[in-house]
Length: 184
Image (cartoon, rainbow, N blue to C red; front, side, top):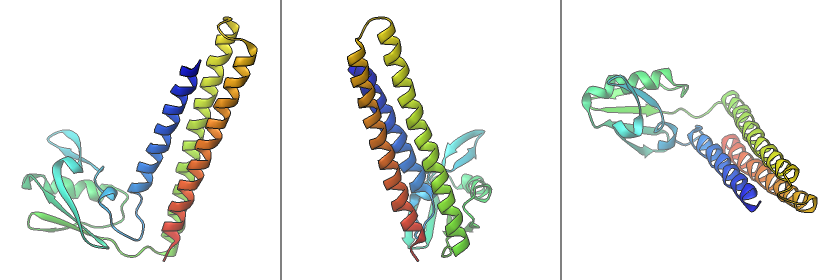
């Protein structure tokens, strides 16, 4: 029975980690490689992460430079950036692509806060679904007489505590990201 709770804990932590990765890719007032490194580029017929096709650096607070390993991929990278929702136009300078991020407008900041709240809520739904799965497994074990009713209740309480803990962590992460975005 400890396996059910342990599996749920591992899956819940993974869901929180996924949310953290999504938040890293959200553009704040500063440029970071995480904003573009997971963009998918059509490269020789395959969707390839930009990180595998180019070196990404941040020479200034509002600029990202992308140096393609294969100069033939520059047009593909440029096209992928244009299709993305980054809101910037790439400037090709020889073998280097430059992305200049203007300061965020108040309207854009509010839109990003909505995105943060939506992503956080989706992560909470995943956590609650994992709790429900654990509860169902515990109930099935009790019905098969593998565990007693007391153990079932104890494990259900553990699952609920774990759920509450992870939801609190999601709220904390979302609050920090929201504060970072609203910072002028």
